[in-house]
Image (cartoon, rainbow, N blue to C red):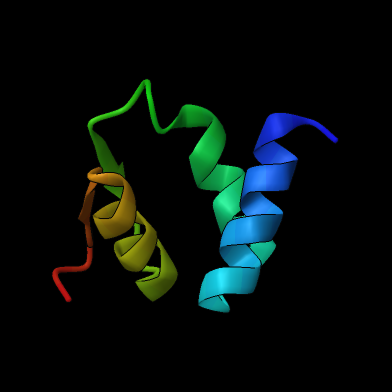
Amino acid sequence: MPGHLKDALEESAKTGIHIWDYLCFLPVKDYIDVVYSCDIHFQKIGGELNVEVINPLGG
């Protein structure tokens, strides 16, 4: 199983956050400093991975 898929499955099982959110985030986490999203799950994942997540809607 590819690394990102395995990691996403493990994190999803641990946190209850959809695997798709992790599959969007994990492959690029080492190449980005900021994510713009209003998704509450991305806020949590960003905190876990030390990536700043900014809600563009200001919420």
